[in-house]
Length: 388
Image 1 (tube, helix red, strand yellow):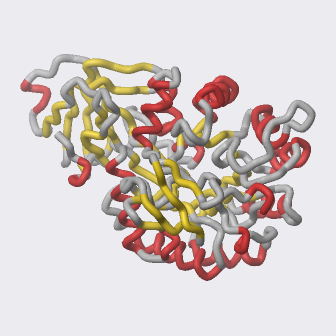
Image 2 (image 1 turned 90 degrees about the horizontal axis):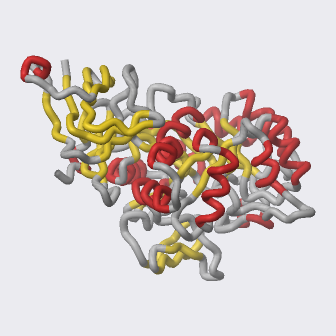
Image 3 (image 1 turned 60 degrees about the vertical axis):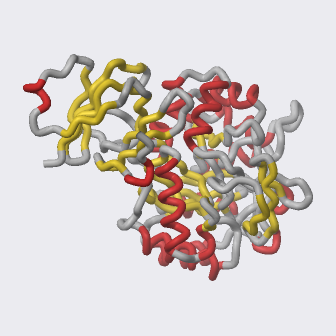
């Protein structure tokens, strides 16, 4: 048996932080959590890992990431997917959805094939599935999406994509107001896929219809969609009203004003709000010129923009998004729920995203600056993440 005890940690367990806590692990699963002083008799046959009083959180789950460390998963290579897996683990993320951008069908199928080659062989964070961001998006709200690849929803094309994906499509972002959008929502829900709305010019009424048809998520909320107006409330206000709809937030102090992050949290709560990176390949590398989605992207001061100034994804990591969320005044327990538990719930992974008996031992140790000290997946430390 592979047995470990992580001791002397501040463990975020649901709505409380236990300290000093001990987390007992056996064969990749959490056995129990206690706050007792350990005696020699209790720890026989267990490897001891000293948490040094630092913060232990459940592994974070990024449902929206495109690339990292100079690699873009749309390049169709297994190496790019592995590099993202490693980069995610280094930033405290233990599972992720490999996320596409709008492209030709050939490039999309190539990306899907490369992801499938890596599933089950990840060197870092586990692939929880694929998130298709497009190509069924509205040109008017395209953001950095390349307009030459945007098209109306096509169920026959989507059937072809599903055949190639072998059940790994977990989330699809569309503009529901496009011709065929409502029919596409129904088709995606029949496949058990999470339907997200974004890059959309949907009116309030169109958004309400989409949510009634089965859409249940909003990709990078407030970004790439009709803004709220007091006589034209749009997609965001419709999502705020629907209890079953969850929201993504890019918390990098660029995409969303701090007051908007707090508003989203106040309206939706931590159980319906998800932290994401939406990172491009500049994550982990920093400033420079990159090619992303068929565009030239310049990253300056950590902010990625197209030549016309349009924001083009982000360079934030999950651990820094968590830190910024706490610095905005949201409790650490709610911030961790938004980074770990809520995305796990949305994806139906109830054995992930929480420190509780019977759950998978996907864990992250953070210092007071939210720097990752190590990442553990299924009870095993990822060597490239160890900092202490």
